[in-house]
Image 1 (cartoon, rainbow, N blue to C red):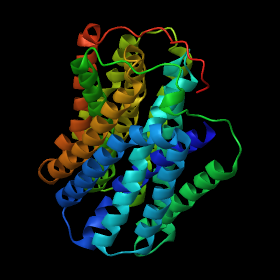
Image 2: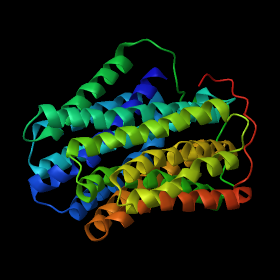
Image 3: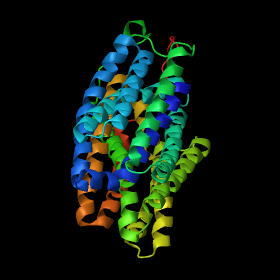
Image 4: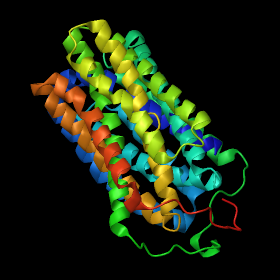
Length: 388
């Protein structure tokens, strides 16, 4: 689980340290528009995400979850190293695709967390996503450091940092002794049941995908918004993401510690309330008001996704592989679509581009609150004689 948590932290760093802080300079260097940049990232994300997530559960059954994690981290090492060494846009895109394939192959980590915390699956998922949030906090600060220290193409330094971090995790997973974390399908004490309500499963996955896409949509465009709309420096605009994700992480830990007795519906309703502050963040002419509201908006993403995933994992506890596949596909689609949509919107209307992410979050959270009864209640933990 230490390796999984470190991998979650690295994923958070890569998610916030690259696209948001560097997108302006990257687009200018390669003479492409923000819309073209967003579309390219979206295509790579959707195609490689679907391939990786589609094959991930099958590979986990065939070679074991632990070996699959090592293979995925190895792909990330090679992909990030190639992105740092080569500057040709087509070659860089190919190595980025390899990195994305490895990243999406590791989507199975959400299921690992619910296995390890079988009695309290929501706490396990919140812990995993809390480490991811810590990585998201660190990412923009590392990007800012690269901007200050490195001249020319600072994002190359960030690629090398990601490659070194991935290699460290790979060495840890390869040489540190530990217990087996996954058994082949033939050794399971239970068999996965057919899905009784496939429509409810895919609706749940779609809501999770919208939530994931809403967070990325806002984080990927916010630094550019503050740079263009309020005249902030690239370094300071990137650092705003750090404070935004500090608020998100603080909210996630708070719900993890104090929200144990609250229902998933109540947690989602409480967590989504700060999304209303995106309106003054996007439209206020006061730089200070806009900055403060944007930082606090991070709270609305704190517990919505983990609470919904834990609830759905309990409802479909006998269909975990199919649920993981569906959630992974929808997350990949939602993140890619959100990035592309805000990139295109920014060129015509900057405030609307800022509003898109929180609006999608409110819509998906409202749908869950209204139709939770159709999804069902979480089943009690199943007896399992195998070690997770």
